[in-house]
Length: 493
Image (cartoon, rainbow, N blue to C red; front, top):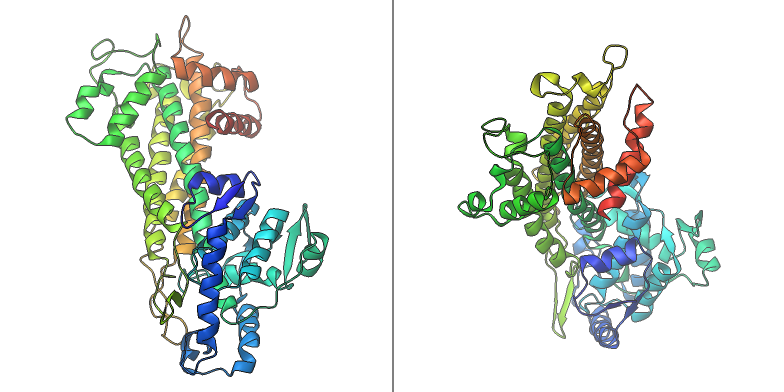
């Protein structure tokens, strides 16, 4: 059980709920904070003073005062009008992550939502009632309005939801789960949709997969080093200490640990003086990616616990309208991660080229035992190159773009949702490139007789060989690539 308590959610908690279906509960102190925030909000709603989104319209309509008898209708209209998403539905884990993060933000006690409304959203999450949410339509400010509005549609019995593997009308999904839809009260619609939780869920889950991809990249790189009889001298800890970057030092240590006991790797001047950059500079490149990940993890952990609402209930006489919904902090992070993960694939593809190009090694051309009749691994490099090239296009930052909205009231936006979706695609492409590298490296290693593999690389090699044999002739490569991809994903956990 994951307990929501005043900004203590971790990335591990996110994974447990989003991907492992862990149940969630509110702590007693959390419930007290929510109740107090609601008391203050209801008092403000009945006053003559304008409070944005409580007794006024939204966006450019913020100057339009709404009568007390129309405040509930105002919130329902907000959800219906803002549910403008298009495109493919968000993935199930992303939906669950979004629900959890929105619950966590509202539970901080600064949004003025009713406790029963928050508990209903929590009941949906725990019961597995997952709103169908199109992935496109958010500018990342005022948060993820369109995706979160689709989430709230299910809460009020509108739209569609997935329950136990089938898609139903939301009211039917709620009924099957024994949950009653909510009639929104003052400010609740705005509280539920004014935040960055869709983009943060997508980006955070992609980041978790990227961290695992870096671990896989160290493994596939070490396998390639054995296949190419690479020089380990360049990984001496003293070289990396004099530069001083933590990630670089960490990667150098990890590569040497993976290769411990290998009879294939060499020392400087055993066979050659130095290796190409894609081998020799693994610590510098993978290490820079490691450092980028460390920065990103700090920022993402802050954001999954952030109050991103507007207005924010700070105190009895302080319900302030600000800009905490703006997605720029995460847009920058996800763009930075996109660049870093793209480089992970980029350097892996260059190692792959060195494995299959006989002009760069002492192995058979394209790792084919009988070249000519068989093409071997020739086209695997084409596929990797295509994915790497696509990543380069996707790595163009989304956050440098902005299109004004709401009649220029919202005149600068983050495009953080786009940044998160691009990151997700780059991570998926990178996993494929790494699997192809590992596949080719195992084939190349089998041309090295009387070998002993490293402590870490040997384990991965054996795992791959349980599923995919040495290829003596051409086979349907797509199927073998899929097998290696699955082995690699499972191997790193």
